[in-house]
Length: 79
Image (cartoon, rainbow, N blue to C red; front, side, top):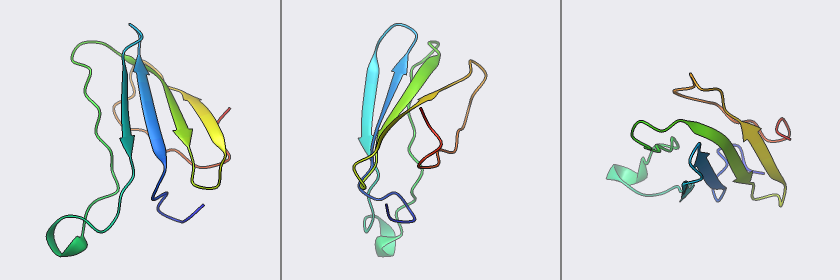
């Protein structure tokens, strides 16, 4: 996939089974300088797993620890 994972579909699931989905985009914002970070909010619930559909076609699952506030996902290093 491309270096910035543009086009990746990221799904985060919390401990109650609720899911949020976002897609990594480029070329938006002021002078097309849209950051590549994605932000998910579940209130008091804790995220359990992150699933990524990379532009290369690879689908991966990344377990998330209860104390995780920020995670960096690398293609090829998930389950």
